[in-house]
Length: 553
Image (cartoon, rainbow, N blue to C red):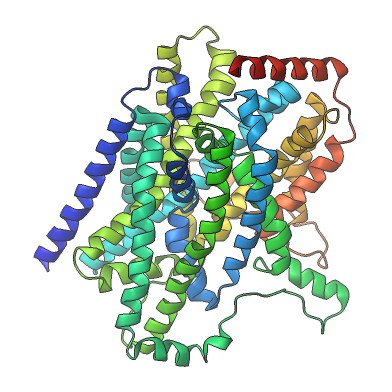
Protein backbone atom coordinates (compact mmCIF):
# COMPACT_ATOMS: atom_id res chain seq x y z
CA UNK A 1 0.00 0.00 0.00
CA UNK A 2 2.80 2.42 0.88
CA UNK A 3 4.47 1.83 -2.48
CA UNK A 4 1.22 2.53 -4.32
CA UNK A 5 0.69 5.75 -2.42
CA UNK A 6 4.28 6.76 -3.12
CA UNK A 7 3.76 6.28 -6.87
CA UNK A 8 0.54 8.35 -6.85
CA UNK A 9 2.30 11.04 -4.82
CA UNK A 10 5.16 11.18 -7.34
CA UNK A 11 2.63 11.51 -10.18
CA UNK A 12 0.89 14.39 -8.38
CA UNK A 13 4.08 16.27 -7.58
CA UNK A 14 5.36 15.77 -11.15
CA UNK A 15 2.11 17.29 -12.42
CA UNK A 16 2.28 20.30 -10.12
CA UNK A 17 5.95 20.91 -10.94
CA UNK A 18 5.26 20.63 -14.67
CA UNK A 19 2.29 23.02 -14.57
CA UNK A 20 4.18 25.67 -12.60
CA UNK A 21 7.22 25.36 -14.87
CA UNK A 22 5.04 25.65 -18.00
CA UNK A 23 3.24 28.68 -16.58
CA UNK A 24 6.48 30.47 -15.72
CA UNK A 25 8.01 29.65 -19.11
CA UNK A 26 4.91 30.78 -21.07
CA UNK A 27 4.83 34.17 -19.35
CA UNK A 28 8.56 34.88 -19.40
CA UNK A 29 8.24 37.87 -21.79
CA UNK A 30 5.60 40.02 -20.12
CA UNK A 31 6.97 43.51 -20.76
CA UNK A 32 3.80 45.54 -20.16
CA UNK A 33 0.17 45.25 -19.01
CA UNK A 34 -0.94 44.43 -22.58
CA UNK A 35 1.31 41.34 -22.54
CA UNK A 36 0.22 40.40 -19.00
CA UNK A 37 -3.51 40.70 -19.68
CA UNK A 38 -3.91 39.83 -23.40
CA UNK A 39 -0.71 38.00 -24.39
CA UNK A 40 -0.13 40.58 -27.15
CA UNK A 41 -3.22 39.08 -28.89
CA UNK A 42 -1.03 36.35 -30.36
CA UNK A 43 -2.49 33.12 -28.94
CA UNK A 44 -3.86 30.53 -31.45
CA UNK A 45 -7.63 30.06 -31.55
CA UNK A 46 -7.42 26.37 -30.59
CA UNK A 47 -5.49 27.23 -27.43
CA UNK A 48 -8.11 29.88 -26.61
CA UNK A 49 -10.80 27.22 -27.16
CA UNK A 50 -9.12 24.85 -24.69
CA UNK A 51 -8.68 27.69 -22.21
CA UNK A 52 -12.39 28.59 -22.31
CA UNK A 53 -13.30 24.94 -21.70
CA UNK A 54 -10.82 24.64 -18.83
CA UNK A 55 -12.08 27.84 -17.19
CA UNK A 56 -15.75 26.89 -17.25
CA UNK A 57 -15.04 23.25 -16.34
CA UNK A 58 -14.00 23.96 -12.78
CA UNK A 59 -13.72 21.56 -9.86
CA UNK A 60 -17.41 22.33 -9.32
CA UNK A 61 -17.98 20.56 -12.65
CA UNK A 62 -15.52 17.73 -12.00
CA UNK A 63 -17.00 16.79 -8.62
CA UNK A 64 -20.29 18.71 -8.55
CA UNK A 65 -21.77 17.53 -11.86
CA UNK A 66 -21.32 13.81 -11.03
CA UNK A 67 -23.04 14.63 -7.72
CA UNK A 68 -26.04 15.92 -9.72
CA UNK A 69 -26.10 12.74 -11.83
CA UNK A 70 -25.70 10.59 -8.71
CA UNK A 71 -28.58 12.35 -6.97
CA UNK A 72 -31.06 12.56 -9.88
CA UNK A 73 -30.05 9.46 -11.91
CA UNK A 74 -30.80 11.52 -14.99
CA UNK A 75 -29.37 14.08 -17.41
CA UNK A 76 -31.62 16.95 -16.38
CA UNK A 77 -28.69 19.25 -15.60
CA UNK A 78 -27.42 18.70 -19.15
CA UNK A 79 -30.49 20.49 -20.56
CA UNK A 80 -28.89 23.79 -19.60
CA UNK A 81 -26.23 23.23 -22.30
CA UNK A 82 -28.91 24.16 -24.87
CA UNK A 83 -28.84 27.70 -23.52
CA UNK A 84 -25.05 27.84 -23.39
CA UNK A 85 -24.82 27.09 -27.13
CA UNK A 86 -27.50 29.61 -28.07
CA UNK A 87 -25.88 32.26 -25.89
CA UNK A 88 -22.45 31.81 -27.47
CA UNK A 89 -23.88 32.31 -30.94
CA UNK A 90 -25.50 35.55 -29.75
CA UNK A 91 -22.30 36.72 -28.01
CA UNK A 92 -20.15 35.89 -31.04
CA UNK A 93 -22.38 37.92 -33.35
CA UNK A 94 -23.03 40.82 -30.96
CA UNK A 95 -20.30 41.32 -28.35
CA UNK A 96 -16.92 40.16 -29.62
CA UNK A 97 -16.37 42.57 -32.53
CA UNK A 98 -17.14 45.73 -30.48
CA UNK A 99 -14.60 44.62 -27.87
CA UNK A 100 -11.94 44.36 -30.59
CA UNK A 101 -13.05 47.64 -32.18
CA UNK A 102 -12.79 49.47 -28.86
CA UNK A 103 -9.34 47.86 -28.20
CA UNK A 104 -10.20 47.18 -24.55
CA UNK A 105 -8.09 45.23 -22.06
CA UNK A 106 -10.80 45.27 -19.39
CA UNK A 107 -14.26 44.76 -20.92
CA UNK A 108 -15.61 47.36 -18.51
CA UNK A 109 -13.67 50.02 -20.42
CA UNK A 110 -16.43 49.60 -23.03
CA UNK A 111 -18.93 50.94 -20.47
CA UNK A 112 -16.73 53.98 -19.83
CA UNK A 113 -16.86 54.87 -23.51
CA UNK A 114 -20.58 54.11 -23.90
CA UNK A 115 -21.95 55.52 -20.63
CA UNK A 116 -19.26 56.89 -18.30
CA UNK A 117 -17.07 56.03 -15.33
CA UNK A 118 -19.88 55.46 -12.80
CA UNK A 119 -21.37 52.61 -14.82
CA UNK A 120 -17.89 51.19 -15.46
CA UNK A 121 -16.91 51.33 -11.77
CA UNK A 122 -20.15 49.69 -10.68
CA UNK A 123 -19.83 46.91 -13.28
CA UNK A 124 -16.17 46.25 -12.51
CA UNK A 125 -16.89 46.28 -8.77
CA UNK A 126 -19.67 43.73 -9.29
CA UNK A 127 -17.28 41.52 -11.23
CA UNK A 128 -14.53 41.75 -8.58
CA UNK A 129 -16.91 40.97 -5.73
CA UNK A 130 -18.84 38.22 -7.49
CA UNK A 131 -15.82 36.43 -8.96
CA UNK A 132 -14.05 36.28 -5.60
CA UNK A 133 -17.18 34.70 -4.10
CA UNK A 134 -17.83 32.35 -7.06
CA UNK A 135 -14.29 31.02 -7.42
CA UNK A 136 -13.87 30.89 -3.65
CA UNK A 137 -16.86 28.55 -3.41
CA UNK A 138 -15.40 26.38 -6.19
CA UNK A 139 -12.08 26.26 -4.34
CA UNK A 140 -13.84 24.52 -1.47
CA UNK A 141 -13.71 21.39 -3.63
CA UNK A 142 -9.93 21.45 -3.39
CA UNK A 143 -10.49 20.88 0.29
CA UNK A 144 -13.14 18.25 -0.48
CA UNK A 145 -10.73 16.02 -2.40
CA UNK A 146 -8.14 16.48 0.36
CA UNK A 147 -10.76 15.36 2.89
CA UNK A 148 -11.42 12.18 0.90
CA UNK A 149 -7.67 11.48 0.77
CA UNK A 150 -7.39 12.24 4.50
CA UNK A 151 -10.16 9.76 5.34
CA UNK A 152 -8.41 7.15 3.21
CA UNK A 153 -5.04 7.64 4.88
CA UNK A 154 -6.30 8.28 8.43
CA UNK A 155 -9.75 6.66 8.79
CA UNK A 156 -9.83 7.04 12.60
CA UNK A 157 -9.01 10.75 12.72
CA UNK A 158 -11.81 13.36 12.66
CA UNK A 159 -12.50 15.69 9.75
CA UNK A 160 -12.87 19.38 10.60
CA UNK A 161 -12.60 22.76 8.92
CA UNK A 162 -8.79 22.71 9.07
CA UNK A 163 -8.73 19.55 6.93
CA UNK A 164 -10.47 21.46 4.14
CA UNK A 165 -8.44 24.63 4.58
CA UNK A 166 -5.04 23.00 3.99
CA UNK A 167 -6.16 21.65 0.60
CA UNK A 168 -7.61 25.05 -0.32
CA UNK A 169 -4.42 26.89 0.65
CA UNK A 170 -2.17 24.47 -1.23
CA UNK A 171 -4.05 24.76 -4.54
CA UNK A 172 -4.44 28.54 -4.28
CA UNK A 173 -0.76 29.18 -3.55
CA UNK A 174 0.46 27.01 -6.44
CA UNK A 175 -2.00 28.66 -8.84
CA UNK A 176 -1.27 32.19 -7.63
CA UNK A 177 2.49 31.76 -8.18
CA UNK A 178 2.38 30.92 -11.88
CA UNK A 179 -0.53 33.29 -12.57
CA UNK A 180 1.13 36.29 -10.89
CA UNK A 181 4.37 35.73 -12.79
CA UNK A 182 3.11 34.40 -16.13
CA UNK A 183 -0.07 36.42 -16.73
CA UNK A 184 -2.64 35.37 -19.34
CA UNK A 185 -0.14 33.38 -21.43
CA UNK A 186 0.56 31.18 -18.42
CA UNK A 187 -3.19 30.80 -17.88
CA UNK A 188 -4.00 29.78 -21.48
CA UNK A 189 -1.15 27.32 -22.01
CA UNK A 190 -1.59 25.61 -18.63
CA UNK A 191 -5.34 25.50 -19.31
CA UNK A 192 -4.64 23.58 -22.53
CA UNK A 193 -2.82 20.84 -20.60
CA UNK A 194 -5.46 20.84 -17.87
CA UNK A 195 -8.36 20.57 -20.34
CA UNK A 196 -6.79 17.52 -21.99
CA UNK A 197 -6.14 15.89 -18.61
CA UNK A 198 -9.64 16.68 -17.36
CA UNK A 199 -11.48 15.19 -20.35
CA UNK A 200 -9.19 12.13 -20.50
CA UNK A 201 -9.84 11.55 -16.79
CA UNK A 202 -13.62 11.53 -17.08
CA UNK A 203 -13.57 9.19 -20.12
CA UNK A 204 -11.30 6.79 -18.24
CA UNK A 205 -13.61 6.97 -15.20
CA UNK A 206 -16.61 5.93 -17.33
CA UNK A 207 -14.64 3.03 -18.82
CA UNK A 208 -13.45 1.89 -15.36
CA UNK A 209 -16.90 2.13 -13.77
CA UNK A 210 -18.40 -0.05 -16.51
CA UNK A 211 -15.66 -2.62 -15.84
CA UNK A 212 -16.12 -2.48 -12.04
CA UNK A 213 -19.91 -2.87 -12.11
CA UNK A 214 -20.68 -6.64 -11.99
CA UNK A 215 -22.37 -7.51 -15.27
CA UNK A 216 -21.25 -4.26 -16.87
CA UNK A 217 -23.64 -2.40 -19.15
CA UNK A 218 -26.44 -4.97 -18.73
CA UNK A 219 -26.46 -4.39 -14.97
CA UNK A 220 -26.60 -0.63 -15.55
CA UNK A 221 -29.67 -0.99 -17.79
CA UNK A 222 -31.38 -3.35 -15.33
CA UNK A 223 -30.63 -1.17 -12.30
CA UNK A 224 -31.97 1.94 -14.01
CA UNK A 225 -35.10 0.11 -15.15
CA UNK A 226 -34.03 0.20 -18.79
CA UNK A 227 -32.41 2.99 -20.76
CA UNK A 228 -35.82 4.38 -21.67
CA UNK A 229 -36.26 5.28 -17.99
CA UNK A 230 -33.16 7.53 -18.00
CA UNK A 231 -34.52 11.04 -18.43
CA UNK A 232 -32.82 13.71 -20.53
CA UNK A 233 -35.47 16.42 -20.55
CA UNK A 234 -38.17 17.69 -18.29
CA UNK A 235 -40.51 20.63 -18.79
CA UNK A 236 -41.24 21.01 -15.10
CA UNK A 237 -44.88 21.69 -15.98
CA UNK A 238 -47.53 19.63 -14.21
CA UNK A 239 -50.75 19.88 -16.24
CA UNK A 240 -52.74 18.27 -13.41
CA UNK A 241 -52.18 21.31 -11.18
CA UNK A 242 -54.00 24.66 -11.46
CA UNK A 243 -52.12 27.19 -13.60
CA UNK A 244 -50.73 29.20 -10.68
CA UNK A 245 -49.52 26.13 -8.78
CA UNK A 246 -48.03 24.60 -11.95
CA UNK A 247 -46.15 27.83 -12.76
CA UNK A 248 -44.85 28.05 -9.20
CA UNK A 249 -43.58 24.45 -9.32
CA UNK A 250 -41.90 24.99 -12.71
CA UNK A 251 -40.07 28.15 -11.58
CA UNK A 252 -38.82 26.34 -8.46
CA UNK A 253 -37.25 23.51 -10.52
CA UNK A 254 -33.79 24.50 -11.87
CA UNK A 255 -33.49 21.89 -14.63
CA UNK A 256 -36.31 22.41 -17.14
CA UNK A 257 -36.53 23.10 -20.87
CA UNK A 258 -37.81 26.59 -20.14
CA UNK A 259 -34.81 27.27 -17.91
CA UNK A 260 -32.54 25.85 -20.64
CA UNK A 261 -33.86 28.08 -23.43
CA UNK A 262 -34.37 31.26 -21.40
CA UNK A 263 -32.58 31.19 -18.05
CA UNK A 264 -29.45 29.34 -19.19
CA UNK A 265 -29.12 31.46 -22.34
CA UNK A 266 -29.08 34.71 -20.36
CA UNK A 267 -26.82 33.19 -17.69
CA UNK A 268 -24.24 32.20 -20.31
CA UNK A 269 -24.53 35.56 -22.07
CA UNK A 270 -23.61 37.14 -18.73
CA UNK A 271 -20.74 34.79 -17.85
CA UNK A 272 -19.22 34.66 -21.35
CA UNK A 273 -20.08 38.11 -22.67
CA UNK A 274 -19.71 40.49 -19.72
CA UNK A 275 -17.34 38.67 -17.37
CA UNK A 276 -13.70 39.76 -17.58
CA UNK A 277 -12.62 36.23 -16.67
CA UNK A 278 -14.08 34.69 -19.84
CA UNK A 279 -13.89 37.59 -22.27
CA UNK A 280 -10.23 38.30 -21.50
CA UNK A 281 -9.10 34.96 -22.90
CA UNK A 282 -11.22 35.51 -26.01
CA UNK A 283 -9.41 38.82 -26.59
CA UNK A 284 -6.04 37.04 -26.71
CA UNK A 285 -6.85 35.68 -30.20
CA UNK A 286 -5.29 37.61 -33.12
CA UNK A 287 -8.65 38.90 -34.43
CA UNK A 288 -12.35 38.84 -33.62
CA UNK A 289 -13.21 36.11 -36.16
CA UNK A 290 -10.85 33.59 -34.54
CA UNK A 291 -12.19 34.63 -31.15
CA UNK A 292 -15.75 33.97 -32.36
CA UNK A 293 -14.71 30.53 -33.66
CA UNK A 294 -13.18 29.59 -30.29
CA UNK A 295 -16.28 30.71 -28.40
CA UNK A 296 -18.85 28.88 -30.53
CA UNK A 297 -16.85 25.64 -30.62
CA UNK A 298 -16.44 25.73 -26.83
CA UNK A 299 -20.25 25.74 -26.56
CA UNK A 300 -20.54 22.70 -28.81
CA UNK A 301 -17.90 20.94 -26.68
CA UNK A 302 -19.95 21.64 -23.55
CA UNK A 303 -22.51 19.03 -24.57
CA UNK A 304 -20.25 15.92 -24.52
CA UNK A 305 -18.44 17.25 -21.44
CA UNK A 306 -21.63 17.73 -19.42
CA UNK A 307 -23.03 14.38 -20.55
CA UNK A 308 -19.78 12.62 -19.63
CA UNK A 309 -19.71 13.99 -16.09
CA UNK A 310 -23.41 13.20 -15.57
CA UNK A 311 -22.77 9.68 -16.88
CA UNK A 312 -20.09 9.25 -14.24
CA UNK A 313 -22.60 10.25 -11.55
CA UNK A 314 -25.29 7.89 -12.85
CA UNK A 315 -22.80 4.99 -13.08
CA UNK A 316 -21.64 5.74 -9.52
CA UNK A 317 -25.23 5.48 -8.29
CA UNK A 318 -25.52 2.07 -9.98
CA UNK A 319 -22.10 0.90 -8.76
CA UNK A 320 -22.75 1.71 -5.12
CA UNK A 321 -26.25 0.18 -5.27
CA UNK A 322 -24.96 -3.22 -6.50
CA UNK A 323 -21.66 -3.37 -4.58
CA UNK A 324 -22.59 -3.90 -0.92
CA UNK A 325 -20.64 -3.05 2.21
CA UNK A 326 -19.25 0.31 1.08
CA UNK A 327 -19.45 3.25 3.48
CA UNK A 328 -20.10 6.34 1.38
CA UNK A 329 -19.34 9.92 2.39
CA UNK A 330 -22.39 11.87 3.59
CA UNK A 331 -21.75 14.79 1.20
CA UNK A 332 -22.75 14.05 -2.41
CA UNK A 333 -19.93 16.36 -3.60
CA UNK A 334 -17.41 13.80 -2.29
CA UNK A 335 -18.87 10.69 -3.99
CA UNK A 336 -16.70 10.85 -7.12
CA UNK A 337 -13.64 11.74 -5.06
CA UNK A 338 -14.35 8.74 -2.82
CA UNK A 339 -14.45 6.43 -5.86
CA UNK A 340 -11.22 7.89 -7.27
CA UNK A 341 -9.28 7.41 -4.04
CA UNK A 342 -10.66 3.99 -3.09
CA UNK A 343 -11.24 2.24 -6.43
CA UNK A 344 -8.92 3.68 -9.06
CA UNK A 345 -5.74 1.74 -9.93
CA UNK A 346 -2.36 3.15 -8.99
CA UNK A 347 -0.90 5.82 -11.33
CA UNK A 348 -4.34 6.43 -12.85
CA UNK A 349 -5.57 7.43 -9.42
CA UNK A 350 -2.75 9.95 -9.18
CA UNK A 351 -3.49 11.26 -12.67
CA UNK A 352 -7.21 11.66 -12.04
CA UNK A 353 -6.66 13.37 -8.70
CA UNK A 354 -4.34 15.64 -10.68
CA UNK A 355 -7.28 16.10 -13.08
CA UNK A 356 -9.44 17.33 -10.18
CA UNK A 357 -6.75 19.81 -9.20
CA UNK A 358 -6.30 20.71 -12.88
CA UNK A 359 -9.90 21.82 -13.28
CA UNK A 360 -9.70 23.79 -10.06
CA UNK A 361 -6.42 25.46 -10.98
CA UNK A 362 -7.62 26.24 -14.52
CA UNK A 363 -10.66 28.21 -13.38
CA UNK A 364 -8.79 29.79 -10.46
CA UNK A 365 -5.80 30.97 -12.51
CA UNK A 366 -8.04 32.58 -15.11
CA UNK A 367 -10.10 34.31 -12.45
CA UNK A 368 -7.00 35.60 -10.64
CA UNK A 369 -5.58 37.06 -13.84
CA UNK A 370 -8.91 38.63 -14.80
CA UNK A 371 -9.42 40.08 -11.32
CA UNK A 372 -5.92 41.56 -11.32
CA UNK A 373 -6.37 43.01 -14.82
CA UNK A 374 -9.76 44.51 -14.01
CA UNK A 375 -8.55 46.04 -10.74
CA UNK A 376 -5.42 47.48 -12.35
CA UNK A 377 -7.13 48.92 -15.44
CA UNK A 378 -10.38 50.06 -13.80
CA UNK A 379 -9.17 51.32 -10.40
CA UNK A 380 -5.38 51.38 -9.93
CA UNK A 381 -4.42 53.25 -13.13
CA UNK A 382 -7.34 55.73 -13.22
CA UNK A 383 -7.49 56.57 -9.49
CA UNK A 384 -4.49 55.31 -7.52
CA UNK A 385 -1.53 55.87 -9.87
CA UNK A 386 -2.48 57.41 -13.23
CA UNK A 387 1.18 58.06 -14.11
CA UNK A 388 2.33 54.46 -13.47
CA UNK A 389 5.00 53.02 -15.76
CA UNK A 390 4.60 49.60 -17.44
CA UNK A 391 6.79 48.08 -14.74
CA UNK A 392 4.69 49.58 -11.95
CA UNK A 393 1.43 48.49 -13.60
CA UNK A 394 2.61 44.87 -13.87
CA UNK A 395 3.81 44.93 -10.25
CA UNK A 396 0.40 46.25 -9.13
CA UNK A 397 -1.32 43.47 -11.10
CA UNK A 398 0.89 40.83 -9.46
CA UNK A 399 0.22 42.20 -5.97
CA UNK A 400 -3.51 42.27 -6.74
CA UNK A 401 -3.29 38.62 -7.86
CA UNK A 402 -1.89 37.64 -4.45
CA UNK A 403 -4.49 39.68 -2.55
CA UNK A 404 -7.37 38.14 -4.48
CA UNK A 405 -5.88 34.70 -3.82
CA UNK A 406 -6.08 35.35 -0.06
CA UNK A 407 -9.69 36.56 -0.35
CA UNK A 408 -10.62 33.39 -2.27
CA UNK A 409 -9.15 31.23 0.50
CA UNK A 410 -11.38 33.01 3.05
CA UNK A 411 -14.51 32.47 0.93
CA UNK A 412 -13.59 28.81 0.31
CA UNK A 413 -13.22 28.26 4.05
CA UNK A 414 -16.71 29.70 4.58
CA UNK A 415 -18.12 27.40 1.88
CA UNK A 416 -16.43 24.38 3.50
CA UNK A 417 -17.93 25.38 6.84
CA UNK A 418 -21.40 25.59 5.25
CA UNK A 419 -21.02 22.05 3.85
CA UNK A 420 -19.86 20.78 7.24
CA UNK A 421 -23.07 22.20 8.71
CA UNK A 422 -25.22 20.70 5.93
CA UNK A 423 -23.58 17.78 4.13
CA UNK A 424 -26.35 17.58 1.51
CA UNK A 425 -25.49 20.97 0.01
CA UNK A 426 -24.36 20.39 -3.59
CA UNK A 427 -21.90 22.93 -4.94
CA UNK A 428 -23.27 23.55 -8.47
CA UNK A 429 -26.36 25.57 -7.37
CA UNK A 430 -24.25 27.57 -4.89
CA UNK A 431 -21.39 28.31 -7.31
CA UNK A 432 -23.59 29.32 -10.24
CA UNK A 433 -26.23 30.91 -8.01
CA UNK A 434 -23.68 33.41 -6.70
CA UNK A 435 -23.10 34.63 -10.26
CA UNK A 436 -26.85 34.90 -10.72
CA UNK A 437 -27.29 37.39 -7.88
CA UNK A 438 -25.37 40.14 -9.69
CA UNK A 439 -24.72 39.15 -13.31
CA UNK A 440 -28.25 39.93 -14.50
CA UNK A 441 -27.63 43.60 -13.73
CA UNK A 442 -24.24 43.36 -15.44
CA UNK A 443 -25.72 41.81 -18.58
CA UNK A 444 -28.46 44.44 -18.75
CA UNK A 445 -26.10 47.43 -19.05
CA UNK A 446 -23.96 45.65 -21.65
CA UNK A 447 -27.05 44.79 -23.72
CA UNK A 448 -28.20 48.39 -23.44
CA UNK A 449 -24.79 49.59 -24.60
CA UNK A 450 -24.46 47.08 -27.44
CA UNK A 451 -27.99 47.20 -28.84
CA UNK A 452 -28.82 50.90 -28.50
CA UNK A 453 -27.02 54.17 -29.22
CA UNK A 454 -28.97 56.59 -27.07
CA UNK A 455 -30.56 54.76 -24.13
CA UNK A 456 -29.13 54.64 -20.62
CA UNK A 457 -27.28 57.27 -18.59
CA UNK A 458 -24.31 56.99 -16.26
CA UNK A 459 -25.89 57.71 -12.87
CA UNK A 460 -29.25 56.03 -13.41
CA UNK A 461 -27.53 52.86 -14.66
CA UNK A 462 -25.95 52.45 -11.23
CA UNK A 463 -29.33 52.81 -9.51
CA UNK A 464 -30.91 50.35 -11.95
CA UNK A 465 -28.15 47.80 -11.31
CA UNK A 466 -28.58 48.04 -7.52
CA UNK A 467 -32.34 47.59 -7.85
CA UNK A 468 -31.76 44.65 -10.22
CA UNK A 469 -29.48 42.88 -7.74
CA UNK A 470 -31.90 43.43 -4.85
CA UNK A 471 -34.78 42.16 -7.00
CA UNK A 472 -33.02 38.82 -7.46
CA UNK A 473 -32.42 38.40 -3.74
CA UNK A 474 -35.98 39.34 -2.80
CA UNK A 475 -38.13 38.08 -5.71
CA UNK A 476 -36.28 34.73 -5.83
CA UNK A 477 -36.48 34.37 -2.02
CA UNK A 478 -32.74 33.79 -1.88
CA UNK A 479 -31.41 32.20 1.30
CA UNK A 480 -27.62 32.01 1.55
CA UNK A 481 -25.34 30.38 4.15
CA UNK A 482 -23.63 33.20 6.04
CA UNK A 483 -22.78 34.25 9.59
CA UNK A 484 -24.38 36.04 12.51
CA UNK A 485 -23.22 39.68 12.45
CA UNK A 486 -23.67 40.46 16.20
CA UNK A 487 -21.75 37.30 17.11
CA UNK A 488 -18.99 38.24 14.65
CA UNK A 489 -18.59 41.57 16.45
CA UNK A 490 -17.86 39.53 19.58
CA UNK A 491 -15.19 37.56 17.65
CA UNK A 492 -17.42 34.48 17.38
CA UNK A 493 -18.25 32.80 14.06
CA UNK A 494 -21.84 31.52 14.20
CA UNK A 495 -23.18 30.12 10.90
CA UNK A 496 -26.72 31.18 9.97
CA UNK A 497 -28.79 31.64 6.81
CA UNK A 498 -29.70 35.06 5.45
CA UNK A 499 -33.20 34.90 3.93
CA UNK A 500 -33.80 37.98 1.78
CA UNK A 501 -37.36 37.12 0.77
CA UNK A 502 -38.72 36.35 4.23
CA UNK A 503 -41.58 38.85 3.82
CA UNK A 504 -42.78 37.58 0.42
CA UNK A 505 -46.18 35.83 0.39
CA UNK A 506 -46.39 32.04 0.60
CA UNK A 507 -47.89 31.71 -2.89
CA UNK A 508 -44.86 33.44 -4.46
CA UNK A 509 -42.36 30.85 -5.82
CA UNK A 510 -38.84 30.40 -4.45
CA UNK A 511 -37.43 30.88 -7.94
CA UNK A 512 -34.61 28.47 -8.89
CA UNK A 513 -31.02 29.68 -9.41
CA UNK A 514 -31.16 29.07 -13.17
CA UNK A 515 -33.58 32.04 -13.47
CA UNK A 516 -31.59 34.52 -11.34
CA UNK A 517 -29.85 36.27 -14.26
CA UNK A 518 -33.14 36.54 -16.16
CA UNK A 519 -34.85 38.29 -13.22
CA UNK A 520 -31.97 40.71 -12.58
CA UNK A 521 -31.53 41.51 -16.27
CA UNK A 522 -35.21 42.24 -16.93
CA UNK A 523 -35.56 44.53 -13.88
CA UNK A 524 -32.32 46.44 -14.56
CA UNK A 525 -33.08 46.83 -18.27
CA UNK A 526 -36.64 47.99 -17.60
CA UNK A 527 -35.33 50.85 -15.44
CA UNK A 528 -32.20 51.90 -17.32
CA UNK A 529 -33.86 51.97 -20.77
CA UNK A 530 -36.16 54.78 -19.58
CA UNK A 531 -33.28 57.29 -19.56
CA UNK A 532 -31.44 58.82 -22.52
CA UNK A 533 -27.69 59.00 -23.04
CA UNK A 534 -26.55 62.66 -23.18
CA UNK A 535 -25.85 63.73 -26.77
CA UNK A 536 -22.37 64.93 -25.80
CA UNK A 537 -21.46 61.44 -24.57
CA UNK A 538 -22.82 59.81 -27.75
CA UNK A 539 -20.56 62.09 -29.83
CA UNK A 540 -17.55 61.31 -27.60
CA UNK A 541 -18.17 57.56 -27.93
CA UNK A 542 -18.38 57.78 -31.73
CA UNK A 543 -15.13 59.74 -31.82
CA UNK A 544 -13.40 57.12 -29.61
CA UNK A 545 -14.45 54.28 -31.95
CA UNK A 546 -13.30 56.26 -35.00
CA UNK A 547 -9.87 56.88 -33.44
CA UNK A 548 -9.53 53.23 -32.37
CA UNK A 549 -10.52 52.04 -35.86
CA UNK A 550 -8.05 54.42 -37.53
CA UNK A 551 -5.22 53.23 -35.28
CA UNK A 552 -5.73 49.64 -36.49
CA UNK A 553 -5.14 50.57 -40.12
